[in-house]
Image (cartoon, rainbow, N blue to C red):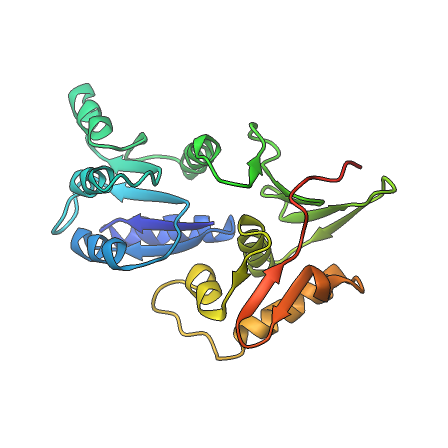
Length: 244
């Protein structure tokens, strides 16, 4: 999952980013509301969630929310603020925020609120289980567990295989599972899996694909994640789950 964070308090922003990165989020962090606005206007990056601070240099979190909703963008937004009066909470929610968290807060509560926003979001072709534990992404015979970073493969004979993935393997497979049977090119993968400002080496995508295929450990792993030479990669899978 990719998340945009707009927070001008550097210590807090760094702490939030560290916690979210450990939870397998790819986090683009902006210190300035204007920079975030320009990025959202000009970028094709697919974000799952957004965290906006209310008080920001340049454009405020409230203005960012209003702009998103004016553009009819449904990106779920969690608003962070030191403002705790009921009237101020109402302003934040009426401006387009989906949830509201008052500073100071516990990181466990932040993660729980993000999970709740994630569950309420709608994704085409992908099924999320309506529960907190475990949180699952199911496509075809593949199931990703967000709590354990495990992949479960269900076979027609009733057997299952459980594999523990690294954070980058998890992020890569999740991106494929959000776009089953679609060709995804190298630039799209880099844009979704590496944060803004990082410059991965030229062969990083091919190397990460090889690692994921090796982790799958099956003769059909290259057929499951197919290389379309000169174009990109494709997850070949039926989107109807095979029961175990």
